Image 1 (tube, one colour):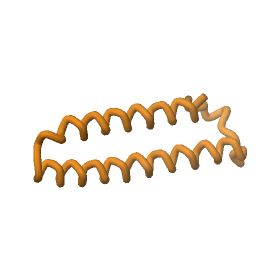
Image 2: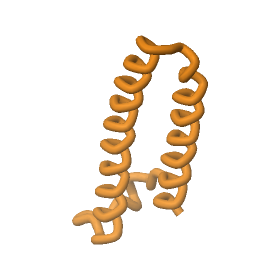
Image 3: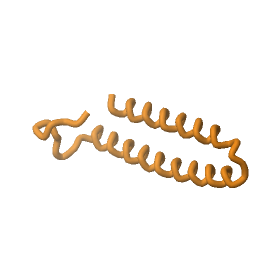
Length: 75
């Protein structure tokens, strides 16, 4: 949840900084995981198209895990 300007703390609390760092790490992890899955998908696709469904399932599962992590941070 985004706080209105009247509620923004300056300097930010340690908790706010920790949450921001966790979100940044999750975004970096998501980006690197997406890049890794793209490489795996490309290599598997070059070898056989039968693995496409497995790669898609892993991608969906990864997105659900990241969404759950974000939800936990915001609570």
